[in-house]
Length: 256
Image (cartoon, rainbow, N blue to C red):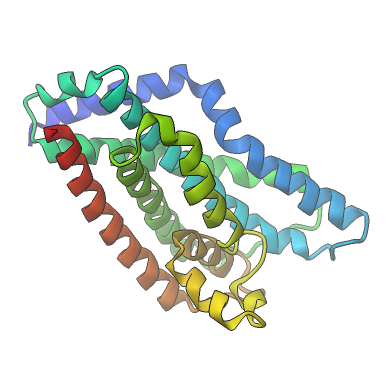
């Protein structure tokens, strides 16, 4: 691998991300912050939700923000480069193996996802107000979960960006992201599905479940959550599957 070329491509994507920072912020944070305000502030202040719900909600919002940020940061530029600007053709001429072009996209997406996760914590905390109780006893687990979720989000973006046509971007949100969000244990713990045994098992194929439950396990272990070992295993398996599928789809799309 040509390290200088890889870093140059990464630097260019970072420059583009900085230039589109305002758009990216509204695109990735508006929806999570609205949910935080409605469920974490309005519903708890009015007494319709217990105050403890704020603490249970925040980890899910962190996972949601990271997944959405990393996936959109990789998928949308890839869709444009493959089908609109044709910029991918210039990248393929770079003195670097084709697969490393995809890896660079994933690394760029991971960085943006990690930044989103770190930013949303104080932002959501401010929106929800007092009463958010998080534990600092599992910081190593939190860091590992954040890295695995960042890779998951970027690999998902690579897979979708290499598979979906530009005319199907809206459909991608309706058929992929909307079910992931609402059945991803973002606003409720996995144990809340106990009365729906079939659904409780089906949602385990949803990557968002492992992101939400992973941060819940690390930050608010007093709430019900999946076992930490199961979460980590699920994240690793999902990462491997999505990276392999994303690389395959990227190569297939680049050669056609």
